[in-house]
Image (tube, rainbow, N blue to C red; front, side, top):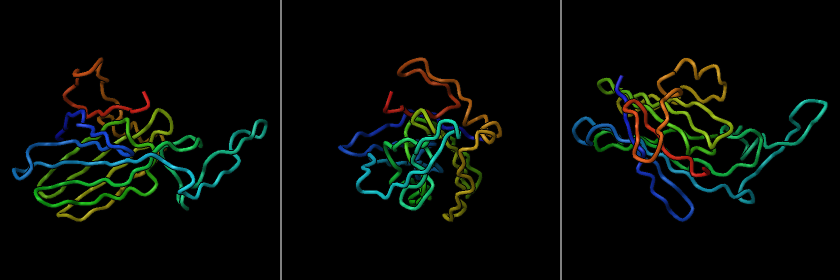
Length: 184
């Protein structure tokens, strides 16, 4: 398994941010993972609330956004959403499915490659509502095989969910790919 270490770079734009994780050099067997997120503007989205919590203390939380179940929140209003994610392999851009992925920045990504096949795994969170995603790209074809907030799956992928955290800026562990949580 090949692991990538990077802090980004994270590129700050007016309303969006981009994380880039690189493995090797493009054109020489390398690959890049890109994820772009934007601020969530509630009036521009269809947000549905539902009753959550115990019967003794029910409250309404966000449970559907644009007819999709949102990953990345614990029923609170969302801060951001994933606009696009893609893998660049050689000179080819392979779009990754990002439906339902909210509050993505603040997490880590691993990239494993074998021949013409790449597996990208990540855990994304803004501090609440963590979720795990896995994409497999084979000869330019894509499938998102996992999108879950079930914490039991995190134990199956310790390399992406149990990294040693950096103790400060510029201090990285060689088997992790972290990027900052903008809300911290």
